[in-house]
Amino acid sequence: MTKRHLALAAALGGALMLAGCAGAASGPGSTGGDTSDPAGIGATIAAPGEVVGQGTVLQTGDAAPQFCLGPVAESYPPQCSGPELIGWDWDAVEGHETAGDTTFGAYAIWGAWDGERLTVTSSIMLALYDPMPFEDPLLDEANAGDADPAELERIQTEIAESAPFVVLSSAVMNGYLFVDVLYDDGRLQAWADARYLPDVVAIRPALRDVEA
Image (cartoon, rainbow, N blue to C red; front, top):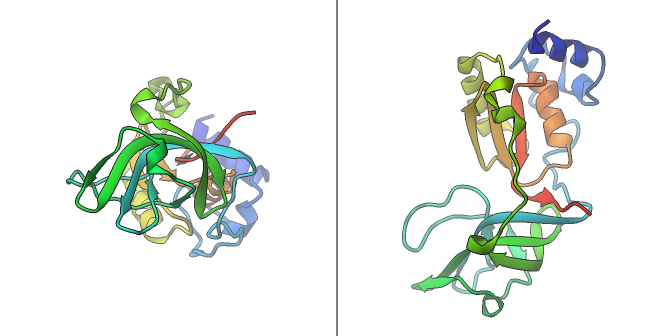
């Protein structure tokens, strides 16, 4: 039995809480014509505890500093956008520079995520950050997905255009569609599994829960 068959059996067996809400999927990529958001995942999802993320902090003029967790335009100064940082103090950190009225730098930041903004508790220059090593098991060639590449590209376009949550970036790799989002407490992955079946879309949050 292939992974796809196992995934279908799991979905039909009720392993996913959202499967019934998202409509009956008859195969990967099936949507049943339903683009609704029954689980409310388009609303803000707050983290229950401290989170950590890596990205570029950018502030222009008197605007609030932003934590860019997605793509950054390679200009000078760089151009990007992201959630607002609360409690960010340029005088308390090193490794930043200013061009015109824009100040920017790359950091790892810990804080409290309320679903819209990140309240900073601590930070470190990204060049000095030594995170715990993480190897995504879905990138292991021995664990390659079996979804059709053309179907994954179709799903990629659909999610970019109509997903009920912010998509930072996405890429088709090793037989899966990887989708980067701000934060996920499990509901975004469950939505993707219910809509496209498991082992098709891999949700990867930029802000990760800090283990106790």
